[in-house]
Image (cartoon, rainbow, N blue to C red; front, side, top):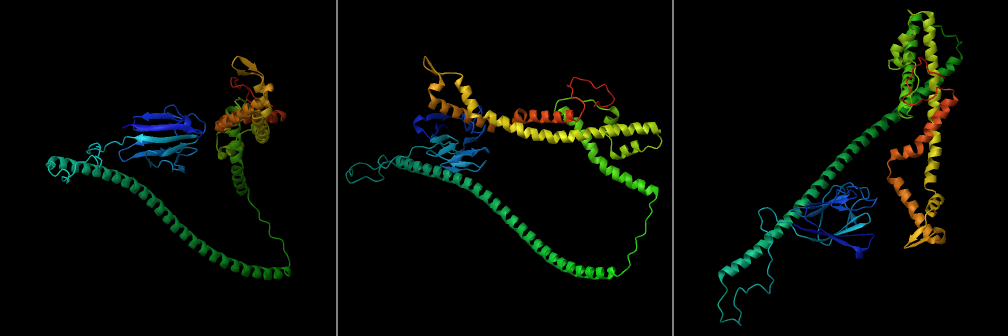
Length: 437
């Protein structure tokens, strides 16, 4: 079971190379583990694979970024596509032609045998020229017909395999059609519901018009009535305290999230350790109800209550430069990061780096300024290479290279200008009980 493939790139069949394969699966991609490795950036690591099956030779696209084409038509991902000798598979800039393939025999069916041509087949009956010769033996005639029957059975086997593949494709299409019909039925139901809602809306608008007319009449009547001030409702102290606690719970929810996020952000994103009040650090892990009980505890002394309020005031003042620093750091990361990326792709910088080394032509070293056209072409290719590298580079690496340093600088500058505590290294151990300004 041998598969012969021919490979060339950039549309140049004159430089094609032949590749025979004995294995059943031939992987295609940029990764070295593939049997056919294509070293191009636009080729996916595991782009496609060719499988030698009993029912036929198939190519499967492995959800590649730039797709796989068979005879100029893009195939759907993860869907086996039958190919044969003479078909061309295109993977980005590479062309792969199926030169030959020894089809494997099906289990229980003998391998193909050569069918004799009409000239080689013996006649069933003697001709007039050989009227005096004896007729062919019955065994020879039987063998000839057996060969014909074997050839017909092999052709039937191939057609059955093709029919099985077509049946699978038809079944997939029927599933898609059933899903589309189900979606249409669902949309029809939604359209019916929208029509009902529109009818209710029209009726509601008419009802609102009627209420507006009645409100206008009532307003005219009220203008003639002497206006009297509404009675003052007195709320007892226990009810007011309950309402105050409910308001405090709502306000404390975002404040506690900002407090916890500030410590986590500085330690994980900026890589710094900060001084933290141990009392406030413990309180940052509690719920709003526990906060209210802590600060409104009537059993503590007046001095201790003032101390708790001072700690809360100091922690609140530290949240403001943190939030402003996030906004300022984002603005600076956008400005500086964009400039750094443009500087990385600056043609003048690339050309200057190119001119530092001369061009080696055999034993000669020629400076690039003496070859302006060559220098411009090489500089242009270098800039294209830098651009491709930036496109393929991980977004996290780009963020760390160009945007994060400026963000950290803007954040630290903002909180430093607000007389915030200095950021120390991770090895520093906090010893103070209060955050230093």
